[in-house]
Length: 432
Image (cartoon, rainbow, N blue to C red):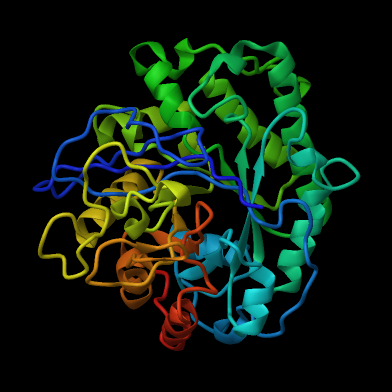
């Protein structure tokens, strides 16, 4: 069962070569909230967090000999941060492809039935309290090991998106002041990394989408040291500060201690500051540059779902914007503008590689909107036919997945991902 959380919105000044993008969050399964930050028109639509995987309570353990990603393992290595991380993950020196939650579909079954080559398999871990991710399997936290085994059977690197801070509502930061909540939070983080450590192979971890944007909005003067949070009550982080900087530092520290083969990253929330430079400054202030990658957020629903104002499908934008980007890059908003803004994160936050994440799977159409499971979008088409543009701005991987139920998925896209990914892999974009 999918568990939609957030509907994001990205905004940007049309004429700027370097754009400040915006996203928004909601704790509703059927509607979106108004954008936390200000926006300017025309705008670019992009993404943030929203869902836990459909395999949250169990994993299939299926296998596929076709999806190891080894078919191009002889590609020459590059020297970029992206190439170095791909090597650490045991993957080829090319733009990697991943799959996250698929609305109404089983990712392992789709990978096997379509004979796909996939490099990354993503799973949400959400909640901190009754019914949270630690309870989905027995014993507590077993989902980490079972999902990792499933990913390995598919020849993929497991990727976990940790989404615990939204337990009491996305944007509600009152739990930072609760010693009870934060004790549970840190216990769960430890359990996750212990499970990853026991797996003993490379794993990716995406830390708390949207939370950093809300933290920037709530921190006095945007200063992460001025927003209190219980941190050093955690024995593993006893020397760290009780604030947002301490949270980020503790997450990285626990990863290094318990799971040396875990590679971790933070997702900047474009709407957290008044402009993109302020967001970059905030992320550096919390220490995001000391992680291993940056999560570059795209759009967690199909553009057509927002265009149709499809409330029943989890899309109810609160203001008018343009969600469908121009593939020809001649009108605003377009992909050249989006990629330029993502390159700013790459260069501005430690030169870390980008993982384009929660990328919708709709099919291009000249007709606006669409219907459930068949909404239009063109991210898959553009990314897989312009892959070298992604590697040129620091891209390491693209993880495709539906951020809510009723979105287009790998089994409702008419074979788009199957055909375009095969064509891409026949002539892949090498990492510099």
